[in-house]
Image 1 (cartoon, rainbow, N blue to C red):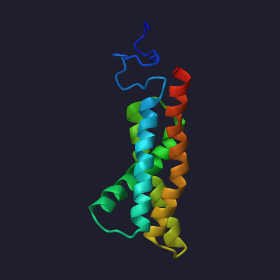
Image 2 (cartoon, one colour; image 1 turned 180 degrees about the vertical axis):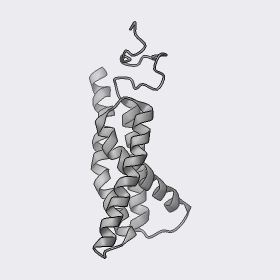
Image 3 (cartoon, rainbow, N blue to C red; image 1 turned 120 degrees about the vertical axis):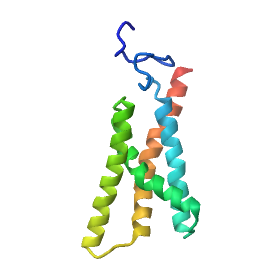
Length: 140
């Protein structure tokens, strides 16, 4: 690797690009797994109709990160700053769009929106978290 722009190989550190992802994608898959667990927890707390600090924190994660990562994570841009910015932007833009549609058709139910967003994001996050297991089996 003579160029600092070269992509790092499996398990190596590239000092020229400290925020570049390694090819095995384990950080991406682990982050997707964490978000999938948060998504399941947010869905459970919403269905159980609990109102406490946990629902507030999970609601922030659900509105600020989970929908965006479900879409942006699939793109595999390999640029940390770009992926982070797009994740937050896509999350807020999609939720504002869905909320506006619900208000337009006079069907505004925030809990229903939260359940639908959680249910739609769950398979996408699961699919992205599978990459870790597939990569681990390929490296053996």
